[in-house]
Image 1 (cartoon, rainbow, N blue to C red):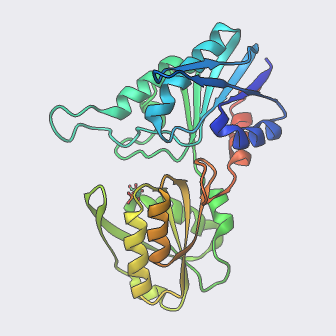
Image 2 (image 1 turned 90 degrees about the horizontal axis):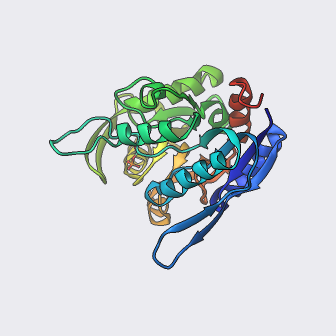
Length: 295
Ligand code: R5P
């Protein structure tokens, strides 16, 4: 079966890199926005396997167009439609914390499972469940980690320290430490609100006069990294840089992180922006080939 990559204008750069690595054709998905806010989506009809590439930051804007494109690909001959979403949205809310709250992970997971034959993403933000397959029943839902590519950007030198701001980040910090052999510290975080977190490192004495690399999966408001960086600077760190899988932060939030002493902040290209300097195409291509989705 032949394969093609299909991408929206907002994802053309990384999609092109992926198509080149896979040695397949890249087809542009055209979109027109009507004055009333509806979208018209037009795909290039291809047979075989269609890999539809779109990161789902700003998901409320992007999801409808994504479903329209998936349907158009199928209607025009694609035998299999696979979503490649380096950033997958709506994975955090996995239970109702208060009566009446929607469980968005379940709703969006089921929606995507209805429209795609398979899905590939990177470090989805899962809390209480182990695997993406539980969220998307009946399809191949594959999640890979960006840790191998992030690990290449850790500050050089035996004196460097890897820091995870909270318990969830331990998995990425330890994955990178396994290959670099660097010291690790992990913070304890308490979230009090969207932009309000408390955080402390037990073993802060380890960072004095050393270069620290903060590693996390997501920057959203930036508060976690900002508070973590202030703790590290107060602990005497010589420098603090950050390696992030998905950077959703606004320029204003990035400016606050710079003011807190983090430089540079590097993230993967899962989401376009000034920090997105680490390409994921190699990892994605490897996973796609490994799943046998090209044959
Ligand atoms: C938490 O579980 C995540 O790993 C991130 O630490 C968190 O989402 C970052 O959010 P914010 O930038 O809003 O503090």
